[in-house]
Length: 414
Image 1: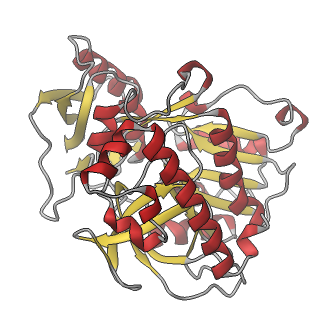
Image 2: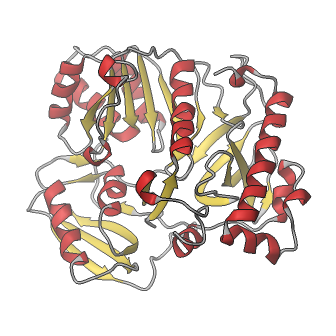
């Protein structure tokens, strides 16, 4: 909490110190990174500043998959004592991420900083849109209503989500941008005005201007958007000034690259992350697939954290089920990550009652994989939905060169 107010040069000194410690650890203890250093003739002491990271090769999602767990985890890691999360974000490539106890605690502190910094209080009533699979038992302090979120399922219909919010009567609404938007839209349609949060935080998906405008009009407060990924956790966030997204530079290095070289402030670049606190499963120059624009401006709020001005590349497609329910793109991340045997996927809505699912086989693929895909999708979107699964060698890219995990050919009114 104190570090966000440090001067930029003080934050940079912290960042470089943590970076050099992480690089030394990864070189010494993690086979994947030891080999990556050696492949280009670089040693940890050769990296003296963030710019020197360009001496090292990027790390791809495919490399993380192929080297998990033996060659990417620190030696002696006991998975039974770790938090193991699985991601299958907008590119549709599932992979696992491991946090030790200390790393997980650190990540939670990083995630709480923007909320607390923007006005959330420790005993606020806190409604979080998420998947039921993410809900875990309450810690002892949460039973005392300290940082105690109440969860709203993203799979529920908006009317049911609204009823849950009425019961919670939240001071803070938090979670997937598309889920909050669909609830706000439904509240406007029904003329319901009984939910009055003091703060709204959106996460995990691209927040369009139309979505932001609808949420802010409905709840009467400005939306504070947050950015990150499962692999690295929270990495950037808006404050009330809306001057850009504060980069958590004291816990992560974000590079903005084009064809492997850094772009100038104001130019679009693909984001590569280097995490500075997860010693259990380090990620160095990890190419996540998101696109952003680095800023050289400072925020009027007085924080020394650097800014990114624009976030692109995370918007997939809303889909409409035969029963009329609209599903946000985030459901594919949640549904597919729980199915073994998927190396990569893409869901295409051909018509309102037909989904085509392209699947590249993963290591655990079996005869049960395809039936489970069909069963889980029907359970979420209704038995009327026809689900065709095609096994393919690779997922075709869009004209822009990106692979998106969801595309709808059915117009959805938003």
